[in-house]
Image (cartoon, rainbow, N blue to C red; front, side, top):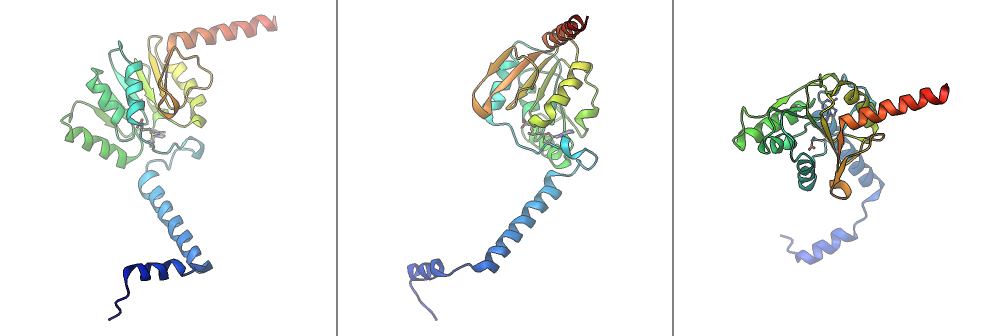
Length: 218
Ligand SMILES: C[S@@+](CC[C@H](N)C(=O)[O-])C[C@H]1O[C@@H](n2cnc3c(N)ncnc32)[C@H](O)[C@@H]1O
């Protein structure tokens, strides 16, 4: 039996060159693994959603969740998280007294994970996760809305929220702010930052802008 000392074996391995073929194999293997993960775990549910509206799953950090909850302080009533991922914001909102607390999510794996978390923590039946496209959800009765989505979809989402939400609604955006709205409060720093928007103020600003345009044309 070959009984080389471990450090000699390590030195031999280090000396070996990978070569072009080895590098190519690692690259192809990694590419396939990433593709399989995207198709099998992250992408299900998105087939009918246009590519430019597909937002990948990235869970909110602990501080981000805390910042969102700080901005919701003093609010009550229902809450929806648009693109609820593993359900952490919905669970935390329920703990803070929001009811009903509902998450809308397209990815079936994440819906199952969110339901599992809720069951494990004793909130089974107290929070709701629905497998629905957030762009098709009727928001006309929502009082508190949280979102953590990609910047590329936020301007389109602004229009939907402005059209559907009641005046007394509050919208909280995590990590990325809405491009044209004026926040009433901001909490946290860097990637954990969250922005609060009063719908009444946004609608008022929109009216003023339109009036200004009319005035300048006349
Ligand atoms: C950045 S993650 C945020 C997850 C969660 N809200 C959080 O804060 O941890 C965005 C989530 O939105 C979901 N999503 C993206 N587009 C969606 C759509 N059209 N309808 C429902 N969910 C969507 C994604 O699957 C992903 O889980």
